[in-house]
Amino acid sequence: MTGCRRLFAALALLAMAAHPLPLAASVTGDRCAAPAEFTVASGALPATAAAVRNRRTLRVLVVGTGSSTNGGTSGQGSSYPQRLEKELASAFPGITATVQTRGGRGLTAADMLPMVIEGLAEFRPDLLVWQSGTVDAVRGLDPDGYGATVASGIEKAVRRGADAVVMDMQFSRFSRATLNYGPFRHALETAAAATPGAAMFQRYELMRFWAAAGQIDLERAPRPEWQSAADQLHACIARKLAELIRDGVRQTTR
Image (cartoon, rainbow, N blue to C red):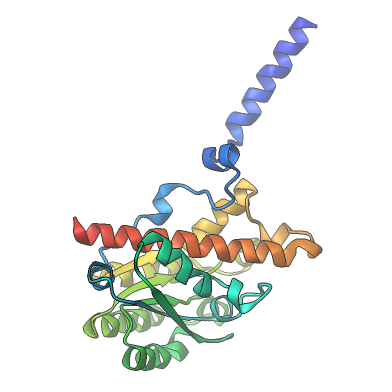
């Protein structure tokens, strides 16, 4: 019996080593837990930092497709743009955040660029959050042209005194098997890296991590629990996005 127990213990340790649980999630039960690399901004956000430093209302313009404007949650207040207001207020005590959302289902980056330009002129945000790429990839559009469109929007935001955070597509096993997101994600990363005042939020990799860790997995959620899982996903996206924005502000102040 002693030998059997030792064998089973050894096999259990091997299984744990092969499939380790994220420490924060396993210990704290935090379903939003993820490696810190996902919330390190790829660049400083000086316009956002100025708004925080001057303790004025932090204005955020979110432009995106269906997952940003109608993400299948239990209500509009549960979507990540609306949750972002509270997360930013928590990240920057004493600051009030106002988030406006524009966009819609089935829009390419080129379709959204006029909305970006209009929103920058009318709302005058301190920060633009632009989510794109899925529709462009589904339609098989040119990744270089996509990258040029996003770069143009980032440049226009910075010229108007706003920072920009670009967000890539959602992770999906089905999409990963049928679509080549790689060139579009690379184009987005390149566009963000080319302009000071811009950063990238890696939603795709973050969602892939959560799914692999068993923390949030929309594709495998039972139908009765799907909407609750969608609410959880949007809550975690808002929290991690706010953490990345906070890091961009910290980079500016350093």
